Length: 452
Picture 1 (cartoon, helix red, strand yellow):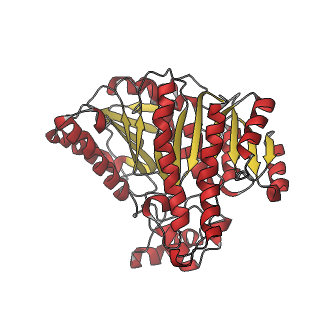
Picture 2: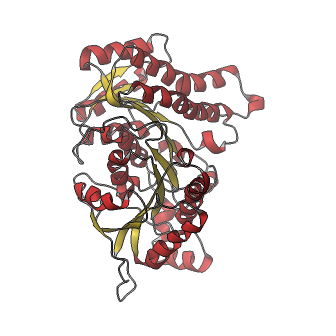
Picture 3: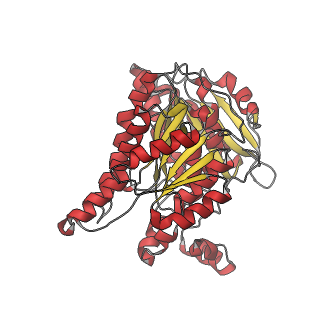
């Protein structure tokens, strides 16, 4: 699927109309290709806090070049920086917030297109007084900057608990790279549920080598792309889909040298069948991606039992039951990850989708309810969710033109995302080096103007 308006806006006549009429001007986003460096350029590092001294060395381990010297824009006013990382953990009062302006204002015009900005802070819930005030203020700053930065660039806030510094690398690598092309204005928490877990070292380009990943709804769309990206990162993928999709599923899994299982995940024995397959064929599982989902839209006044119950069963109840079965049998390996696919609809709501929005908000509740339990068992197993916005797929291509255009343009990047954007976010969660990233819900929506 392609964005026809984006193509038009880059044509000679389109450029004229966009400029003269003030129309949206979506930048072609840079996306990651296998084997490429995480960052093609230099990252400026600065700030005040406990993380600053270790940042250059941390970035170097991922092959990312950094500097602490603010550059001057070149003679033509072009950018010279591909990213900015600001350590704000040392801001302990509202008056300290001036450090944000002092660091960012002089270098904003030095950023290249599709640049990445990351602010590091301390979870406000873990501090008190003036420090709590200053750290909470970072959310307003980063979300606003994300809406004004433009040119395909992104801005994120990463709250890192004291003692969780060892779990920062995978998140920085994701957020500074083109893997996070359609993620912006997000708040990530590292170590918020505790920091007693040892984070394993992994190969930056093959972090899932030797791991097994279960992906439901894997035969097409977002699920297919998730399977491809996890396989690219080294995982053996076990794809699950309904019997009607068996042919497509088998073709894909053979291509990826993976495994497959066809069943209805809402079936009474589905959790046990999945668990038995993973146990006998693979000895367990490292990554569980609950991607399978359906829509059965109607306004609530016209909603029948079948529409309501089928959406809740597929999107929410099945992931709960499958996860519980795998955990109870001890089949999720240490440093494993459980990942739910929520939706912006579960955050902001949609007309005609009370059933779907309830199920996707329930996925967020599922993450909240399970995160503390997993943190307490000390095995490094995490649970997180992605919340996609408008993602260009065969399904969204069938949406009426006007509705589709509004959905694609009503975000800071003025365009829809691609299935790979959701897949890359899931792969970041799945990385064993993300073992301190637990209980997060990250929107993959280009920073939509609606929703929290």
